[in-house]
Length: 472
Image (cartoon, rainbow, N blue to C red; front, side, top):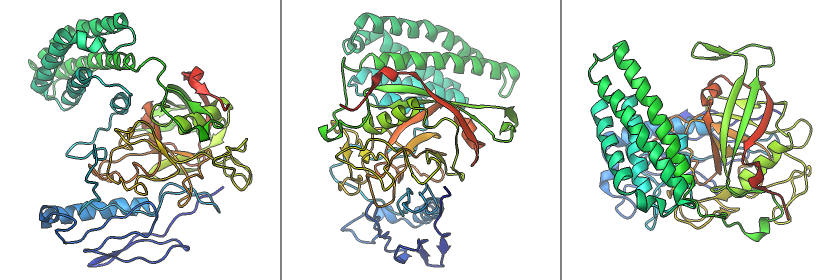
């Protein structure tokens, strides 16, 4: 089933006219008023102290940010994706950096607020764990900073981060293990991290002794990166041990007749091109594209449970990719008249027009005890607040739905081809409007050459299948 798109963005000298679908009203946008007539997103830019301070309207920054917003809008007006007929596409919304909606009582603002966007899926998954231990979060900060500094050849800064991380594991081990389900396991993990910090220091120090750009420097930095990666994976294991025994994200009983994922699961997906050609990733050719995804039932138990249930049913096997436009890669629309998976519907949500099992929109804001359902973050009056899993990583996974119907998702999902230039820091317009339920943690580069018509040969759960809870 083909997707339809909205018309191109039209630009005027002093105003921007957004693209409109045949069913949407024409809404002009000027430099002093930005309004999109939609139930899920509104941005106002008024030169008034009642709403925003003058500092947000500095001429140079406003011009640069407005251009960025236009670029983002151009993409979003044609993005993810609609069912033909009962459309499953992104709401007609636009982001501008001139100003942003704010909530006075926001506990934490949206992902990427500030100068740096966290694009690391493994880091985002760690931050998404339901744990409360400030010492391990401090350790995480320095360990992850080592990787960033190694990547940018800031060797002295990486050594300084290592020194701080080592101090934490040496002096605050007891405070960290006190949060663990099994203190002995955590002590063993921490010891393994300590053992790797010596070799990491050696390779970092060695890299400072070589000329910039030399083979010796590159070899030392590669070794440092590999060792840091091992430490980082141990950090993940340490934090996972801090999730309370038997922890389950609370979900209203209304949705007990839908599959739910109590924890996390790993999915491996294998894709091929229908004509036997190779995937070309910057000159590296591969006959198969293999991606590994972590699906998060802590942040999105119903959405993640629905996906894992469909994977185990073989629903996505031999299914083609139905959209690849440089913004998203999308699939999940089966052949035939049905626009999703046909199965026993939930009493609370109901069925689609062709018997599709539908799931509710599920949004989990940081600081809340659990997700809220059937409404967007904007509808809740909480626009701008951070979600537990943000759309800030290349290969972030989101659930597609009809524009004006929050409970219209069934089986279609997308991978976001995140671009920080199109999703500026603090202006992620997807968070809170579509559920992010996981990330590609290995093989995300294949998304660059996955095209419409490529085939999912297989999708299988390789870890965490026992955490899927079927309807009662």
